[in-house]
Image 1: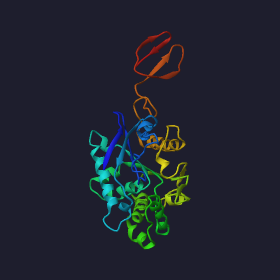
Image 2: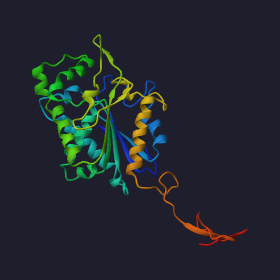
Image 3: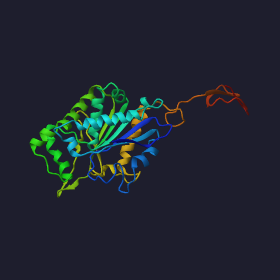
Image 4: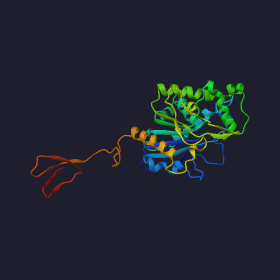
Amino acid sequence: MLLKILRDHDDARVDIVFVHGWKADADHPSWTSTRFICWPEKFIPAKVPEARILSYNYECQLNDFWTEDDDLITELSNDMMDQLMDQRTKGDQGNRPVIFVAHCLGGLVVENALVHGRQHDERKTLVDCVRGLILLATPHYQPSTLSQVNKYFQLAGETPLSNEELIRRSKWVLSIPRDFARLRSGQLEMDFLAFYEGTAMLVDGANIKIVDMSLARLPGAPPAERLAADHLHITHIEDGEDRDIGKLVRVLKRWVAKILPPSEDGNVNTKVSNVSKASFDGSHNYGIQLGQNSGSMSGIRVGK
């Protein structure tokens, strides 16, 4: 399990953390194109220059999520939060806003991290810094939709679970959406947006969506929005002009502009400083001049 910094710079003012989900192809790195380009590292910095880009990588088996034994999801969630806190110790990084982008079951890891972190003496400080969560095809199961879990086992080429097994082994994945929805409605002020996969996959001879619109919707949240790709290729962005990355970037830019205070670097949200008044000979009008110039120009007297 490793938190990796993909791109950083001295002027970063927000952390964007990418969290992958279950990987059907263990040989294909997360968040990469078919040409193995890590698109959060290559495309996001130019489009959201205020951000430091990080990714959390971990080993993930379906049986880690569907188990009758120990709560392995919380182990992943706590580790992610602890590693992120370790990366935020310099200067004022500990107060820097955080936005998570998570795919598939990685969304449950993040939601669970916020639920449990809120109850932890140290991690709750990080939870208070989380200002946004974008989910890409994350399932929010309820008792009435448990049968859809078997789509993952079909995709993995494993034997589907019986109804009895689903009930016994789904206590963690059932509790996370419920607890996170409760936290979000009461104690956690943050932006939230879920996307679902727009294209079906061929699994066992049938075209299916692993996470459709209804399954992607968090209880109490607005309806999930559509991305064009299927469940696995939703994170395989090929180029910076991809339609799906365009939707993702627009959300990130809106949220970053909303949560960051005005900058002082002359870009968007710039504070105007060092303002002086200039009086013009033969006129009673006054204008605003940037800078602290002094001296005289033809027909113009400029004062501090």
